[in-house]
Amino acid sequence: MTLVSEAVANSTMQNPDETTTMVLFYRRYVLLGLLACWAVGLGHAGPALAASGKVHVLIIDGQNNHNWRAMTPPMKAELERSGRFTVDVATTPGPKVPQSAWDAFRPDFSKYDVVLSNYNGEPWPAEVRKALEDYVTKGGGLAIIHAANNAFPDWTAFNEMIGLGWRDSHFGDRLTIDEAGKVVRTVKGEGPGAGHGPPHAFKVAVRSPDHPITPGMPAQWMHAKDELYPGQGGPAEHMEILATAYSDKAKGGTGTNEPMIWVIPYGKGRVFTTVMGHAMGDDTTAIRCVGFRTVMLRGTEWAATGQVTIPIPDDFPTASQVRLGGSGD
Image 1 (cartoon, rainbow, N blue to C red):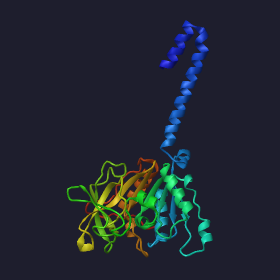
Image 2: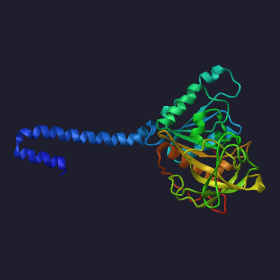
Image 3: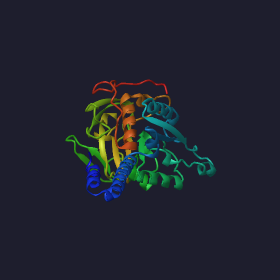
């Protein structure tokens, strides 16, 4: 018997006239408790998740210096195949189109738990930029894949959300991790700007094994042939670097450990970035890597919910072996 129901019973025996008051109090107590639980539940889930139990994803593509047409379908298929997501795609107008085409591009971010950007191209209309800022500030998730962090150098809020982007050395600070595992901040104007050497397979080192995205991953694992981005720059505030890769000078790199996966809180929202995921021409090796696919799935779920339920697969790469999934979408 709860304390409240016991109080009602005692009141009935001692003073029947108080019974009605106590019963009303008890009902009100239960109702407030239920409402509180309901509110807490909604506080951790977007509108689509609260309604369906699945994470509702919006992929944005349409322009990119990489082959976005070869990237979006297999990423969408992988998200849906996990059973955790439903996915829509919003394709922007192409480059150099009439303004009327952009006037019609108004994605409703509020319908989704997370927005996944596969976009690197012309600036979005101011109304769309403001809508994304508000969406993330109020608790929406944002996932950035590979060259999507190259986009929008003149958009202040976007730079704050992604932390580091493909920028020159004078744009902002740079973060790396030294051999002792310490984060090193290089102030803007010093060190290299963004770039990459020839695509190659490289080893990823997990730096934050307790973050929800990374538990169960090997401390080191081989990623398939990809562009390894060094020299990323930006505000680099409130970043947690989850994984790095050594940028070998023999491969045109910087000779230090560069961030490959990181997260940033923005308002009430969460932003996940991986700079892995290169696709050029017909070469989709990087996005076929089981490691990349797992990072994308877990990072997108975390950006949407703050938690991760998707498991590390049995065929995840090892410290010495790349593992590739199928090429079909």
